[in-house]
Length: 249
Ligand SMILES: NC(=O)c1ccc[n+]([C@@H]2O[C@H](COP(=O)([O-])OP(=O)(O)OC[C@H]3O[C@@H](n4cnc5c(N)ncnc54)[C@H](O)[C@@H]3O)[C@@H](O)[C@H]2O)c1
Image (cartoon, rainbow, N blue to C red; front, side):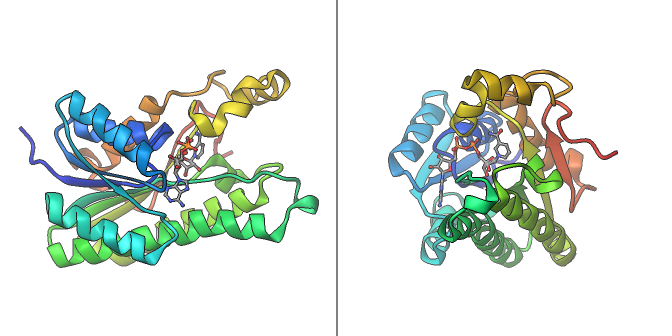
């Protein structure tokens, strides 16, 4: 049996983060389930423990320095130095750019860009002190890779996450800390409108070569891979799990 690692997942109360937390727990890791919504985090922990896994809940707003430092402390106290840290929490506030409120721009940037920075920093400090290396996986989007309509705030934030992933990968490689990002497309509460609005969903599905939304579990397997020994030579990369929506031409 492989060593049980301490894995931290933010935004793990529902959607993709929940599937990621469950996937790590299913392979025997101990998971710190974090979310701004404490009740959702507790539900994820219950589901993991019901299946025989190990997890604990720690509510945190990823954009709060105090919350993120408390999250790192809780992880170390419960399960030892984090070996895997997933910066997944996210929000969206769509609007066409000529009508977008500056506050909606700031809010989305704050959660994604500042939140991911704080997560990377906490993970790096803990992993560097631990001396045994580690893996950080961030969450970006096709919006950050190719732009999108009606979400300039979200696309800007996800683009920033790609640049931060590459910078952190370069900076942390000397400590044997790998940093990668996943760009998913999955059926979660965040994509509900896109999937249920008939016109919107038909137009969107037309752009996906595989012609369907992925499941959160399909995306979660990429996180498990990027945290595994099998990906030991991969750092600074963005892995799209999106049915072919984004392709480099
Ligand atoms: N679902 C997709 O197709 C898709 C596509 C591209 C990128 N993403 C990204 O994947 C990640 C997960 O998205 P999802 O689809 O599961 O969304 P979701 O809305 O279903 O879940 C997001 C979770 O993050 C939590 N959260 C929100 N703000 C937070 C904060 N400040 N601090 C801590 N937790 C917070 C929410 O409570 C929620 O549990 C996000 O970063 C999102 O941008 C999703």
